[in-house]
Amino acid sequence: MKRFWNWIRDDTGGRVLRLNGLIDEDDMWNDSVTPKAFRDELMEDEGDITVWINSPGGSVWAAAEIYTMLKDYAGSVTVKIDAIAASAASVVAMAGDKVLMSPVAMLMIHDPYTVAMGNTRDMEKAIDTLNEVKESIINAYAAKSGMRRSKIADLMSDETWMNAKKAVELGFADEVMYSDEKEYEETVEDEGAYSMKRVGQIILNRLHIADEVRPKAREEPVIGMDGKTENGAVPYQILRKQLEFLK
Image (cartoon, rainbow, N blue to C red; front, side):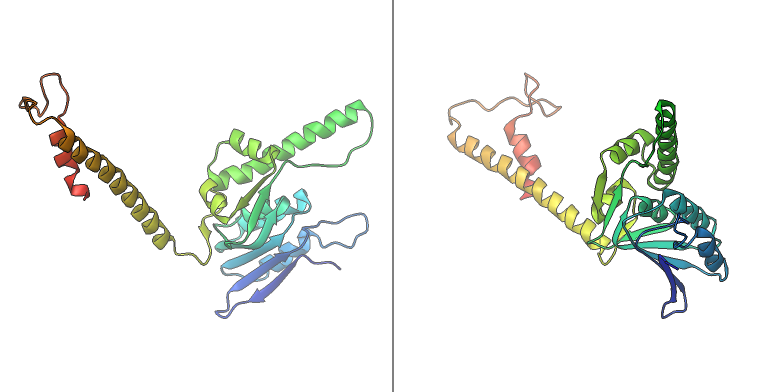
C-alpha cells in the first residue's frame, strides 16, 4: 500500500507529519492510500502539529479533503515547506495557521486540469467543472493570502512559481525559515537611510558649487517672513541649511 505521509515525534514529543511525493486518492489500481486512512491517523492523537511538505502535487480531490481535515483539526497546524509545494500540494499548505518556507523551497500554483473524452456537451461540461474547481482552489489561496480573487486567478493561469521571499510578499507564506526578519528589516532601513543621505549630499554639493560660481556682485535676494523670495521661490541658502543635517 502506497503512502505519501508519515507520522513521527520530534524531540519535544510534538506531532510531526511529513508529506512526501504525490498526494493520491483511490485510483483504478487500488494501490493508493485514501484520505480516510489519513483522517484516522490524524484524529487518533491530539496536540499541535508541524506538517512538512515536499510534494509536486497530485489529486486535487485528495488535497481538498486533507486541507479541510487540517483546518478542522483542534490543535495548531504549522506548515513547513522544505523543498516544493506545487499544484495540489500548495492547496494543502494553505491549511497551516502559520506557513514557513525554507529559503531554497518553491511554491507553485496553476489552473487545474483533467482528461476528458466524449462529445461537445461532454467537453463543455468538463470545462464548467474545471472552472468550478478553480474557484474552489482560489477560496483556499484567498483565505490565506488576502489577495484579490481576480489576481489569484491570473497567477494560476500563468502557472506561477514562487520562491520563499516572493511567497511571503504575496501572502501565501508567513515566514522564511532560518532567516532573521528583524535583521533584514533593519538592513533595508539602513540602506534606505543611506540612499537618502546620498541624494541629499549630492544636492548639497551642487549648492556649494553654485555658491562658489555665483557672481559676487549679484544682490542677495530679499527673503520674506515666510522664508521665500518675492517671486515665491525658496532661496538656495535656506535649502542648503535644511540639508546640512544630512552631512
